[in-house]
Image (cartoon, rainbow, N blue to C red; front, side, top):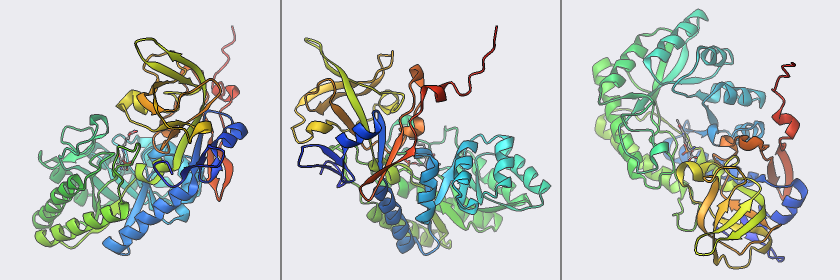
Length: 436
Ligand code: LLP
C-alpha cells in the first residue's frame, strides 16, 4: 500500500491502481493519462452520506463540489450515490444536465453569474441558487418574477475567519470576492432584501471557508458565527433560517507527511459542535449541507507519465522530465502543492533519489514538484503522480498546444475510457480559417 489501499505494488514490482497494473494502463491508453478508481469515489460518497445522515439527520445532504473534477460520468456516479451537486458555471450546469443529473439537487454557485447563466439555470429547474451579492439577488428575483415562480435560494455569507490554508484557496475572510460579510452589516442587509423579494424563497445561508483544511477548529468557528447570525436574523426579522450549508474544504493526504482524516469522524465532530451551538443560540437545528470536492475525488486519481530527459546538473538539482506538466497539473506552479511520485515500473524499489519533476512546457515554472523523493529514473520509465483526482483535469489547459490527457475510470479491475484523449484536430476544432 502506498498512501491509500488502492495504490499498491504487484509481484512484478509495478504500481497498481485499483488492482490494475499501471504499466499495462500506460501501454494500453498512452501517457499522460489520468487514472481514476471509481470505487474510491463511491466509497467516499457513501462515507459522507452515511455520516451526514447519522449525525445531522435524515434530510442532511452532502453535495459534490463538481469544480474538483467535472465530466459527464462523474455526475452519473454521484447521482447514483444519492448526493447533490454544487455547480459553479454554465458549463458545469450543462455537463450535469447532459448527464441527466436531477436539477432539483443542484446548488448553483458563483460570485458573478451572468444574466444568461441565471436564465439558463432557472429554465433547467436548478433547485437552489447560492446568491452571492445584491446585484445577483435582484437580477435573479426579476427573472423568477417574469416566470411567476418562487426560486429557492441560499445567501453566501463570509463569516470572516482564517482557515490556515494557502491564501489563494482561502475564501471565508471578510476581504474576499465571495459573499456578504457579517461584520460590515452587508450580510444582514442582503438577508432583509432577500426576505422582501416575493419571487425568492430564502431557505438558508451558505459559507465556505477554504480548502485543504485539516482541523475541525475553523469549521467550528464558522459554525459559531453562522449560528449566532441565524439567531440574530430570528430576533431582528422574525425569520427562521431552515438550511445551513457549511461548504467544503476538508483536507486530503497527498504525501506521507500529511495527516490522514477520518471524514466520518470529522462530520461527527462538526455535528456535535453545531448541535451545541444551536441549543446555545436558541434556534432550531437547520438542515445541514456539506459541500466536499477534493475529499471525494482527489485520492481516487493518479496521473501516469512517460519519463523523457533525465539531467543531473553537477552541484545543482536533478531533473526528471515527463511528457505532461503544468497543463495537466498546474497545482505546484500555482500553490506549491506537494505530491507523491514514483516510478511505476520499479515501484518496489526505495524512493531514495531526489529530483525536480519537470513538465515539457517552455516555461521554467513548469514543474510538478521539487526535491521529491523518487526512484532513480531513466528515459522510457513510467512515472506516476498520486492523488491527482481533484483540481487536475478540472484545471487543465492546452498551454503549448498540448492536448489534454484522457480520463480512464477503473471499476471492478476493468479500465474504461471516460473522457477521450484530445487529438491535435480537437485542438483546432474552433479555429476559423480566415482565408487570405
Ligand atoms: N464549495 C465552495 C463554494 C467552494 O468554493 C469550494 C472550493 C468547495 C465547496 C469545495 O472545496 P473542497 O472540498 O474541494 O476543498 N483549485 C484549488 C482549490 C480551489 C477550491 C475552490 N473552492 C486547488 O487546486 O487546491
